Amino acid sequence: MKILVTGGCGFVGGHLCELLVAKGHQVVALDNLLTGSLQNVAALKGNAAFRFVKGDVMDAKKVDRLVKEADAVFHLASIVGVKLVIDEPVKTIETIAEGTRIVLAACRKYMKKVLVTSTSEVYGKGIRVPFTEDDDTVLGATSIRRWAYSNAKAMDEFLALAHYHEAKLPVVVVRLFNTVGPRQTGMYGMVVPRFVKAALEGRDITVYDNGKQSRCFCHVADVVKALEKLLLHTPKAYGQVINIGNPTEITMNALAKTIKAQLKSKSKIVHISYAEAYNDGGFEDMRRRVPSIEKAKKMLADGKLPEGVHHPSYDVLIAFL
Ligand code: UDP
Image 1 (tube, rainbow, N blue to C red):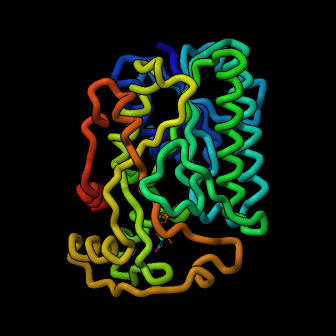
Image 2 (image 1 turned 30 degrees about the vertical axis):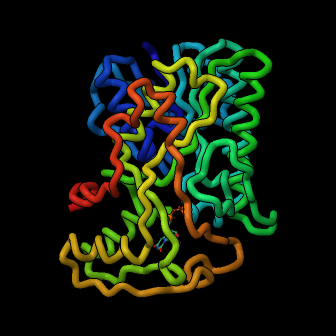
């Protein structure tokens, strides 16, 4: 198959391109390299089954041409990381809402199957965990910039489902929960690579707030297997919203301690307030964020996430050494 991956040079995108090429597909990665990097697809350099196209999902002409040539589209291009969302709110909203509108319009025009990556941020401040796909979303005030990201992603979901409703566009919406793995950068706020890098360099490991907030981390290798399987082999997933993540929870205090211990680091674990971490009021954290993966397990024929990692995937730390 010919497959287009938007955001193909991002952290998740690079792993997805590798998987798709390994499965014998012809892959085109469209990426503007804003947060993506050619290092994420370095293993595919010179491979005849892989092509990198530098460009933006806001370029409707380019997207139209690439979608027309493809048999299936994975739409991963987005703004990445809490830090960018807070610092560049206009770009965040425009890339997510307009970029996805353009990609979906082209997929509808040529009736190409498409997977849209959404986010667990869509659940917002929901406190009833685990989060199931049909739960109400609890999004914060529009004066808090973080919520622009969630709202824009929610609008992407509405639009994807609207195309399914109106035209039976084969579209799958996936809500990704925290994903970790080799090559992830901490530059845009991701906590695991930030803690690992600090621990390796002997700098303070900086936990925000009281560190009792928790997250669930899924290995990227499991995530991309689920994405591939859902779009290419699971027609009953079309028109559906599906959580993909690891349901095992860990607090940021425990994460910091584990990373420090595993790396035998001399770093100090320190706590700072959210206000110090993010400079001003553009931020509000979620305390817990746990996926229900019952629907994913049902959708994926064998009843479990592909080689699901159902415990925190700390083996990932090795990759940073
Ligand atoms: N966090 C932290 N120190 C950091 C970066 C993040 O304590 O250097 C916390 C953050 O407040 C949040 C959690 O780690 O509670 C996960 O943050 P991340 O930005 O990785 O992902 P998200 O908030 O989108 O789940």
